Amino acid sequence: MSSESDPDQIMSEEEIVKYLLESLEDERKDFSIFAIRQLKHYHSAKIVEKLLRIVAEEGDTDKKIAALGSLQKRKPNLHAKSIILKQLLSSEEEIRTEAANVLIEYDESIIPDLEKIYGNNLQNYAVDKIVWLLGKVGNPDTLAILLKHRETLQEENRPTLDDAVESIKRKYTKIMLKEIEKKENE
Image (cartoon, rainbow, N blue to C red; front, side):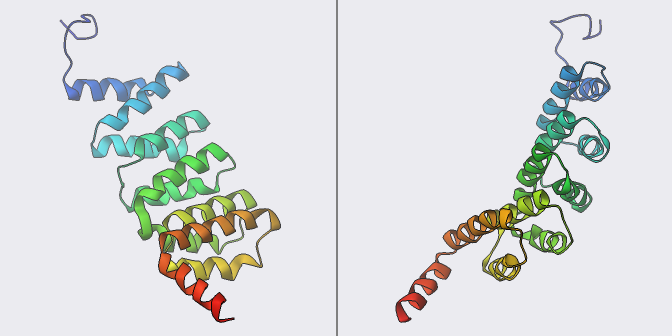
């Protein structure tokens, strides 16, 4: 008897994953989003590849956000990183935020990628999210880059930049101590 017709039958992990992957194509949006979210509990290249395909190609914002959430805490490969980085440029705030939350997992290794994107001519909303993310993963070298771009930023992005700078300073208290000494010597 198949597990589909007998609710008391226990499915193997492989059967559950197969069922969830098939459920991604379900017409019922809530059900397919549920399946996307459940995939975060299972670890295989096939699942990561499917989640990345949803992130890269899906037009439905809710499904894209669910897939990004399911990728979090996995530190996917470089291919995955490039797909997720592109989501920082999305016009949808929820997608940018979810992508940023996944990219935080890469910690300082993501800084060169963010700096490269940051140098491009971007929409203010994308600049804001990239600056915010640099504040979360940045190091003392990042401060110089952020401060260098401060004058060229739109006024509406400056509070985010100031918060990012303060976040890095809090993380690296030596920088704060040097600033205090500098102010005292003035």
